[in-house]
Amino acid sequence: MADLDDLREGNNFGLGIATDTQTFHVKGAGNLPWGMKDRLSRIFNPETGRTVMLAFDHGFIMGPTSGLERIDLSILPLIEHTDCLMCTRGILQSVVPPNTNKPVCLRSDAGTTILTELNNNVVIDIQEAIRMNVSAMAIMLSIGDPAFEARTVANLFHAADQASRYNIPVMGVTAVGKDMARDARYFGLASRVCAENGANIVKTYYCEGFEKVVAACPVPIVIAGGKKLPEKEALELCFHAISDGASGVDMGRNIFQSSHPAAMIQAIHGVVHNGLTSDQGYELFNDLSSK
Image (cartoon, rainbow, N blue to C red; front, side, top):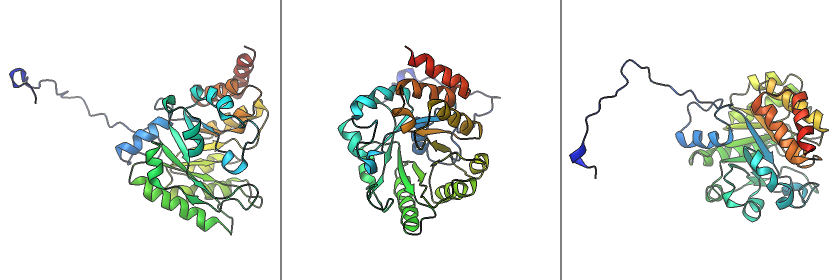
């Protein structure tokens, strides 16, 4: 109970000073509840509004692919340089230290591997995401795939419905099949479908005309790195994506399959958060690699 013997009358009301409306730094999140904004703020740096996410969830369809044979040796040394971890619950609970203190975007759907037809997935129980204290849930959408489009859209819709009850953001991840065009028309459609069905973040690929994809998507877009590129090309990809409006990257192979992963993720961080050009990022990569 308050000590009534020292009750002081308020006298500093800031009269004449306009109230700070605190416009939020994450696109499309201004009307969301406090808990949702809090989790988004863990992922997107409040100073830049951007993020460097480290994706190492590949094993759920690829198994021990190159660079992910030993998560403890390849990924854990990189954690200090990332803003957010994207991984599966199996790796999270078996390898990632609980005192890492980094937000987690949990791969929240699974069902098939590269040995069969991909994307025939089901969604994790929301209670499991809550128990693991994740900051976001990632759900794959297979837009344009006659076999699995409806199922994957329903997966996202269901996940967004459940997650919103507990103020957990959902990231829609746009899959690209062998018969799908990698162009602005497709990625614009797929990204907008993600947002329309409740995604708070969209992960998609960079392409020509990417600025139109970003403009038509009401929530932040982070780009996927895709296949392994030479380091300079990967940094050019980051630079062009950020210049065209991306809110960050969610990269895996272009980091953990690099010749110097720690140097690479720091160079990407410089491009995303510090305004480095791709040439400056590559110079930083070479400097760090030589130490």
